[in-house]
Structures are given as C-alpha cells and as structure tokens.
Length: 252
Ligand code: 13P
Image 1: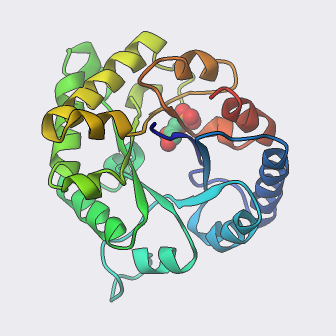
Image 2: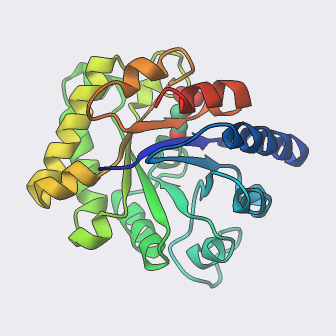
C-alpha cells in the first residue's frame, strides 16, 4: 500500500526562534496522534535543517530540504549539496517547485540532475509539477504536466523511480486561496498515475505517492484527500501554524 504524506513547505518564512517554536509545537502535537502508513515531513529553510533533524530524531516526523545543488561538493558559492543534506539526516527534498522554475529559471534538465544527485544519496525527491492558469484555460494542462514528468523523471529505472514522491501543484492554486476542486485534483492525479503505469508498470504506479499542493488548508484537506488518487498534500501557507497543519495531518 502506498504511503500517505503531508509535507509542510515553509518556503522563506520564520526566523530561527519562530522556526524552533513551530517545530516544537508540531512535534508535541504529533506525539499525541497515531500515524498509520503516514509520514509527516517538515521542509524548513536550509538554515534550520540541523535544528529540525535534531527534534525529528525523537519525534514522529521526517525533515525535507527545499532545494539542493546537483554536485557533492565544489566551487558553487551559496549552494548546498546532497551530501551535506544526507549528513544532517535529511530524508526528502522538494524539486521542481514552480517558484524555482519561475524565479530561478530551473529547466527540466537541471531538475533531472537534481533528482539524480538526491537519489545517489538516498534522499527522496518530492517532485513538483503543475500548469499555469493560461495553460489550463487553453486545455494544455495534461500536456504540460506530462512533459514535466517525462523530462525530469522518466530517465529513471524503476527502482530509482520508486523513491520519488510526485506533487501536483497547479500554479494558479499556489498561495491564491483558490484550490483545485477535488474533481480537478483527482483527474490530474489519475492521469499522472496512468503516465507512470505506461512508462513503468501498474504496480509501480499504484505504489507512487502523489500529493496535492495549492491552497490546501484545514478546511478543504479532508475533501481533497478523500479522492482515491490523492495521497496527501504539500502545504505552503497553512503549514506555518501548528494547529492548522495538524488539522491537515488528521484529514488523511
Ligand atoms: P500554498 O499552500 O501556500 O498555496 O502553497 C503551496 C505550495 O507551493 C507548497 O509547495
């Protein structure tokens, strides 16, 4: 049975003391719940990864990074390597987020390199894909997502692919307060699963965790997560408050 995941993408938010408070609040709340076949992943800014993995060591969540550079070491000023993440016990890393595609012009090929670099060190990529509003309005959303998935993931062999988590994040839903409807989410998740089955096999597709992201919150999580192909969420704004984040976790 595929794993359910709720991951919090904190993006560029919180100073250290606030981050510490939020992590501690979530860790304490997680102590009170039983997670069955479910993983909670917190992705704070890189500066807080060490603090987060220290707390996670005695708690019930895993830690993810928001970015990585695809080399083990070298002259790449300002960047962080997968080797460094691994040494801190980071388990996941978000790749291909629309904000990185947009502001940092990350290409399909660069994302492919990041995926390979992470898998080499046994860090699970959370690979984001999703269309812009004009792409949906012109009925290109399936083609856009297909290309993103094919170009950055489908070079992988089946064993490597089985480590990947996919996150469908329609760009028009990110930070807008307008989430995809449960029907829109289900339709795209089923489509992605079908792509995976076509490239690999049905078992691999059935075992792939596909998360929904984009204005997912305490109010709509239950409805979105009730869809058969929605295996949890990648949460932005609503992951910055412990109570609401825990409400989302308990919607799984
Ligand atoms: P919001 O939940 O703030 O819309 O952000 C979603 C997201 O980008 C998670 O990666």
